[in-house]
Length: 277
Image (cartoon, rainbow, N blue to C red):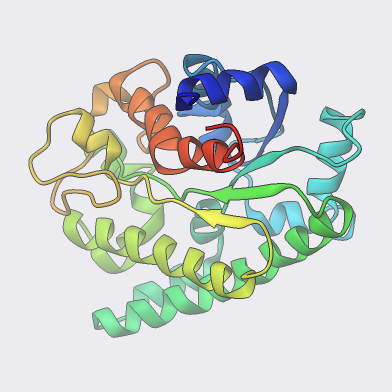
């Protein structure tokens, strides 16, 4: 029988995988699309990873372009010869919508309880959901075979500069300087949001993995696991770029690279080769 590694090598020999990275700064700032390319290279998978991600952009920003056709447009630009579109899409989107939405920030500032803040998050999640589904619906009409993977984000670094800049703009209106509160809000937001999308698309190739906490685990922070951060701690600042991004080429960036494989692509690619494994 073929081993898994041999099966994956056969995949590489048969056809190159086309992979689109679509979204925000996690695709172009940290860990970047290079981490995803490195993951395929590390496991001898012939893949062509291309990115249209732009830091600071939001899902509703992209959804407002060309009547929600941005994912289709970017695919046609980056993979003009791929009739069926990319084999996979890493969709990284939703964080910037939160700090850019004055209504959400105003709602948090008026919240008196965790339940109030959670209600603000749900309203904001619904807005992002609408923008995301416009793009995904249009994308799958054009490329129904393309598989979309969403990962969410990572806990930020907590040095003074980050606390007073990047970290401030997300949940500080409710949490203040309470790191546990901010980390829990970020975690709950993305987990609940991606769960809603899974409910929306049970019959579409939409999948999610939770990598949050991987950067902390790589730094040896007690209690941190991939998918579950240490709530009262931040990520290691030396391995973070612009406060909230696992830095490419550091153990934090490598942890995200490896989580892509461990949590999704290893089983995904082997499952597609059941006839030869």
